[in-house]
Image (tube, rainbow, N blue to C red; front, side):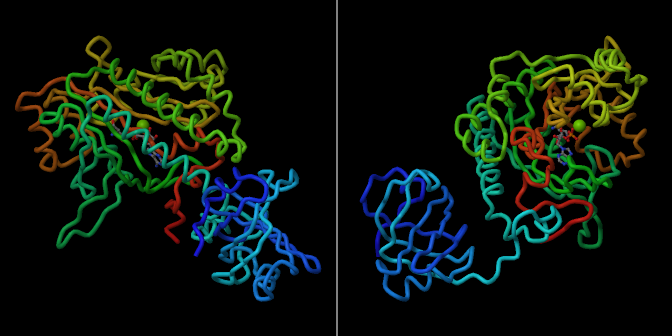
Length: 432
Ligand code: 4AD
Ligand code: MG
């Protein structure tokens, strides 16, 4: 049994070196006594030349007849050939088919729905492989960022008895003889934790019954949240910019080839790392929109089309602060100097990718919270524990949540957020 090389390593070898790879057939064609089989593994693709005269009969039959996605083990020698992908190919001396694949149900140019129905197989595509690798780097970067800034990882419950971002998008779950809900955000629990750990972060599945079919909404997504005692709005917005720049930098350092494979030019993304990312108030955003011919009255959240229009003015992400208090979640405090505005922010990505981060300072005033919860029609009983956090040594604190998939969609330049997560869940899809 030979030691196997990753294809990326095999592609570094020299003329006539011995080599052994294993993987899946990516492309194949044959003519007469010759088969050209491109094999893929996690790390890349490589052409194998299988010549009848150099192989045992059974091996040549396998190389000639195995269909794409058959699993194979190949031994041979390296030959440099600039026509081969990566500039090297293997001249096979052994070609073993581990499992003969049936006709693969995915061929070129298939619809998004067909690819989603076959997501368990489409994960093997070069596109999905590249995205999953970038996703891996992103989540690793989030841990590295917060751990290097003295944050503790904190684990909130996924089953929660109340809402955080409005009752309309809660998923209800049977809970013994009662009901409970899937987490819309871990924030309220993080607020409890900051009185012990002061700075906490978490990355967790998050659930929203979004009753709209858009290219930006998932029913199950991952949110990376942070919460910090003693921080104000200005400090958290600066931290959000630093975090997103850190994630972007890591992805650019480690995945230039993957981004290019996705058709994403890394150069404009790299240019953003050295720029200042502006912070503007919502009222300023309305002025910019007005100058661009879009009139919105103060009082509503910005919609996707308005975010897109606003971002025509910018070539980096932008932080918008001080949204109208009336349109915001119950925990976002009024600005004491401008009570119709809330001490909150969104970060909006360029190119129409919209909101990627949402956060705020938190109201520390129990009466203000009670009133806001009443206005949302909530039963106060479910929030008494949360109100307690304002009764025993409350301090100013702030936090935000990063939409992992939203950031990935933007950095990878994807048309649809569904491709950022291996098995997407939306209003119209709960499988495979
Ligand atoms: O703006 P949101 O609703 O903020 C919160 O949940 C706060 N409690 C976070 C906090 O302060 N700790 O959601 C945060 C981010 C959004 O900016 C967006 O990137 C992402 O989560 N997001 C979604 N991503 C995919 N699909 C959805 N349905 C999403 N809803 C929100
Ligand atoms: Mg938001």
